[in-house]
Length: 259
Image 1 (spheres, rainbow, N blue to C red):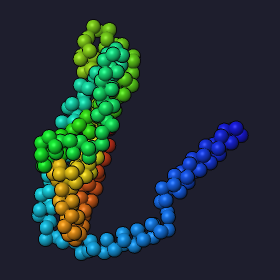
Image 2: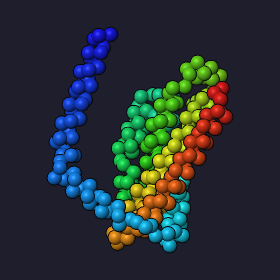
Image 3: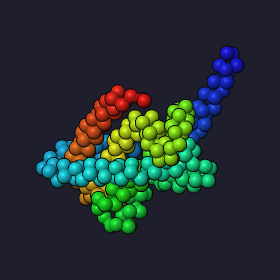
Image 4: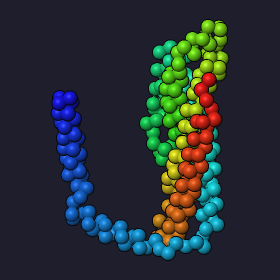
C-alpha cells in the first residue's frame, strides 16, 4: 500500500510538472497577452447585445437545414459503418481482412469533421450536400470502430451455440451478434446524432451549409447582434436534442433486454 501511494505521488508530480511546463511554454497566462485579451473579449461581448430577433425566421430555417444535414449524415454514416465493422471484427474474419478494414477505419478517423467539410465543398460546391457527406464520413469512422469492438465483445458461448447450427457469417451476425449488441448500436447512433448537430454547425464555417454559414457571414460583416441571435437559437436547439436523445437512449436500454 505504501509503495502504491508513493507511486501515485510520483505520477501526480510528473503530470503536474509537465502540465505546468506546457502552460509556461505556451504563455497561456502571460500578463502582457492574457489581460489585454480579456479586455478585448469583454468589448466583443458588449457588441453582441441586444440580439436582433427580426432575423429569427431566416435563422430558424438555417437551423432546420443544420438538423437535416446532421440527420442525413448520421443515417448515411450509420448504414456505411455496419458492413465495415463486420469486416473489421475478428469474430468473423481472419487477420488479413480485419487489418485492411481497420486500417481503412483508422484512416477515416484521422481526418477531423471540418476537413471533411472542406473536401466535400470542393467536390460538390457550397451547400448542405457537402455538409451531409462530411458528417457521413466522420460518423462512419466513429461508429465502425465502436461497432467492431462491440461485435468482438459478444459472449463466445452464444457465438459457439449459433455456429454449431452450421450458419453462415451473415446468419451469425443476424441471430447472435446483432441481438447482443442492439443497445450499443442504437445508443451510439443517437449519441452521434447529438454530436453531429454541433459538428454541422461548425461545418457551415467552411461553406457546408446550415446555420454555421450564417454565423460566418455575420462575423465577417460585423453584425454581432445577428450573431447572438444565431447562438441563442443554436443553444436551445442543441439542448433540446441532447435531452430528447438522452431520454430515448435511456428508454432503449430498458426496452431491449439481452437475449
